[in-house]
Image (cartoon, rainbow, N blue to C red):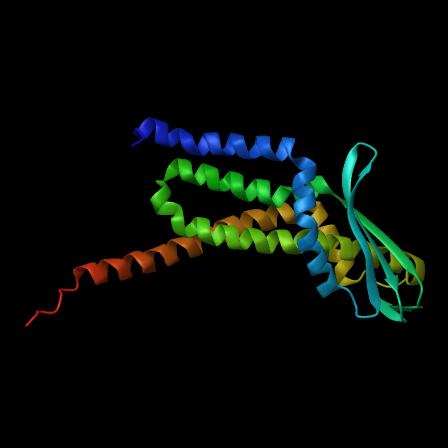
Length: 214
């Protein structure tokens, strides 16, 4: 059994291990996210658009997710109809994609410093679910926004920005950090309620007297 002092150091060691893993497995982490992003892109793209490729490539000193979409039929994008056979490219930095996981998991490690691991079991379960949700919508929304931004600039520059482009600017302008923190605090609130219900149910089961045997 760990002493209280050693147990309090575990979250700090976990945080250092997390940051070191992200630094050394930077490209590998991005590669693991590609299948998730591919599925999300298929859901967000119009039916008349075909996802040609979604890759993680080196652009100068930065690693970027790049997407290529081709219209196989007339499509509505950015409030404008574009013809078939148009190829559109978009991209975003891998570093931006890793911000929500680092923020949420780092916040969890700090939370573990304040409470015992048993007390944060519920928030941890909820946080992992919300982390998957945030990660699965962050980069695909930015990539979709970049595609709509290109179409908007070429075909409908006089019109207001579509909501996809506004979402991209919002996330790139600090929205993903705010989203990660909001998801963390939501996981703490919902997780504590979930754990309270589970603890209360377990206590009632233990306190219920057994039926007498004949």
